[in-house]
Length: 152
Image (cartoon, rainbow, N blue to C red; front, top):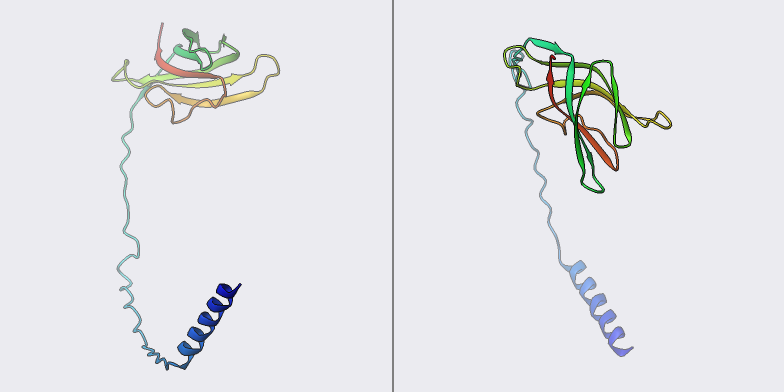
């Protein structure tokens, strides 16, 4: 208890001593920054060029399914308009395309993935073979992705 009183007295005396010291404050006015001329844009213009590739439509997509719990995978081919069950998911292919100049190149497919029991949709959209994580199926146990698109 004596230590606590001594500490309090020390702090109180330090506060009184610091208030007795005079402080001087200097205030300077800042000059405003020059405004850019009207001809100069505030943000530089960004121009992007997009290369447009012609795509061919295929009638079959090759898919791979993965059961993340037991590590089993399955490959299957699915025709346009068709559906197949991949483990516990019903996958439907609406459309499949690939680059015209490079048929073995980057394929993309419009898929719908849903629960076969209650019809809950887990994924609907375009999947790209070279970037499956770009627009991926979000399911806790299963994964499905596009390998290639072909015309058979």
